[in-house]
Image (cartoon, rainbow, N blue to C red; front, side, top):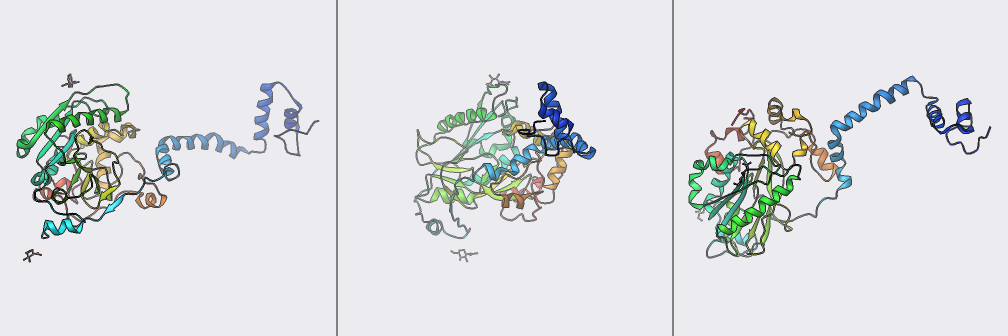
Length: 389
Ligand SMILES: *[C@@H]1O[C@H](CO)[C@@H](O)[C@H](O)[C@H]1NC(C)=O
Ligand SMILES: *[C@@H]1O[C@H](CO)[C@@H](O)[C@H](O)[C@H]1NC(C)=O
């Protein structure tokens, strides 16, 4: 029997392996190779193969996203760090001394401030935002569409509730844009289409050079004193990102302080474009709040989960089950059962599991505290939500 060049056989060859190496028809050959390979495995090993492997595949199917996220530090390098600008504030400090602390001079007159948002359905957060910014904003700009980013039809929620925002009416530039309703398209395409429309609306609102323009989602709320500082000081960066505290569901669940997407711009006609990505390296510390999924009604959670650009995260229909959502909110767990989005294992492991409750309601938006009863669902210890809006 030829032993040489038989890769599947040990020295202690037997009949099966012998015939493999001895040659046969191709199909028979591969069958016997399998048998050869299995030779020596006992029943337990076979069970493991036919029961264990499917179970493993099922686990990978259910948690596949988790596994890839967990390995993220391996496949994605962290972005270039920001240049942090220390941020000073005291209600009794003069504007001149505050500007000076930041290395800036004070102006004779404050700049005009334009606050522009793409609106979906977040009425409560909008009310808190506009009241926080109201003393410092010259013009509120709001655009809404009858399509979500994911191409679902949506009512014009702001238009229906416009009476609720009477305090802003005299300073409001409101616009609507028709959805394109393209089936199966990446949601980020509709999102950028709406941002382009928002650029036009900002022009209509009468912005001019060196006015300040706030670019942020509705739920990214700069603190009023931050905007006041930036409108009064000279020499602030032309494009400045704002570091916000990240909260989830309410101000009870303080996730981290890593929100940076909100930015403020000294407007330059023909140059400034509304964007929600990184546009500069400067980040002003502790400049407000980002409250994600901070909704009053469970129905708003399910709407937002289906409407926003990360809709692919709904991998199983039961994620939308109201009882499950309520449970997730009260535990500070993740709506999409995902791992923390981090670039280092150290940070990811530190954030595994639900967000611990915070009992601090210090330094929150003033309008929220003045109307604590109306907005109790945003305050510590009030995780129970109403079903419908
Ligand atoms: C605030 O400033 C005024 C005058 O500048 C001073 O008299 C007062 O004591 C200060 N109050 C606090 C709480 O620091
Ligand atoms: C969306 O709005 C546009 C423009 O107002 C309109 O032409 C279109 O019919 C609307 N589509 C739906 C599905 O409501």
